[in-house]
Length: 311
Image (cartoon, rainbow, N blue to C red; front, side, top):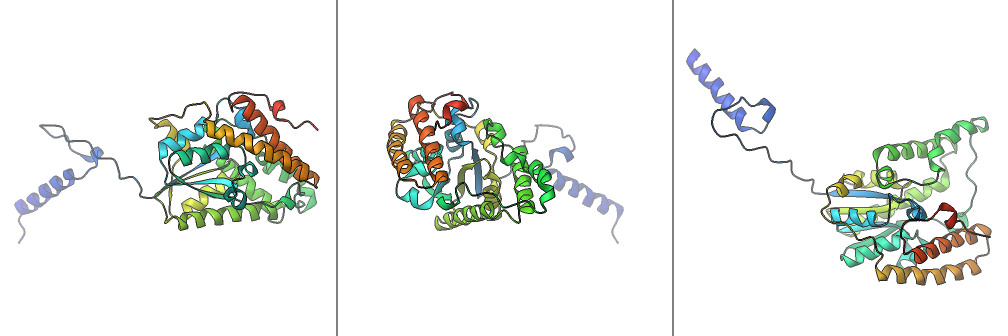
């Protein structure tokens, strides 16, 4: 028969075992030396972060200079970097095909010996293509309101561009566009290719433990979802920068400046060779941004009108 004394002994033993766990809020105050604090939980083995960039408006927004992109890299120390550049132009060394900040990021990756993979996708014949019509037609105002964030200037500071609030708004707006425009084929196809290229890059590099992506702020949610879906724990860029012990210098490296100057010559040639008006407008915009970046050494700040292409 189990005695009351034996029962009390079992309860006391359970209490001692419970105190050995690491739940400070449940501990009974003990006499003697204070127990050591609980160790932090282990870091997830596979981590990723997606940085939303704002294109040429990095030259306008003083609170989001290009150096912030480098700060994330320095803090996170990735093994693989994904950038918003198309595959063929990237491998041909024609990064003027991408937004100018991708040249800066690619250069930093090279300096740090980090592998870089391009994950953007679009077709020249789709430049300037009209959006699919809203269906039904009488919901045009509703569709416009629900997707408004997609048409606003990307004039966000670093915290806004990489915060949860804007990411949620963009994700919801993208879904609204898909609902109202029969799937919005051009946007949906591009995002599907970007996700495919990102997943392929991660796989080909043996699933690195730390992956960092730089994409347009409006593309951030789809790449964030993809990397989370293939098994990565997502880290917010703002949190990474807040914990950084190292910051990038604001002056542009000579290699970046030389790359931009070479890209300027090639963009001028592309403008001359362009036959369609949308394609010419695309390359003219690239050329104007590169010219300002070179003239100002990508420093702060210029007005938005300074980036406007003059016919």
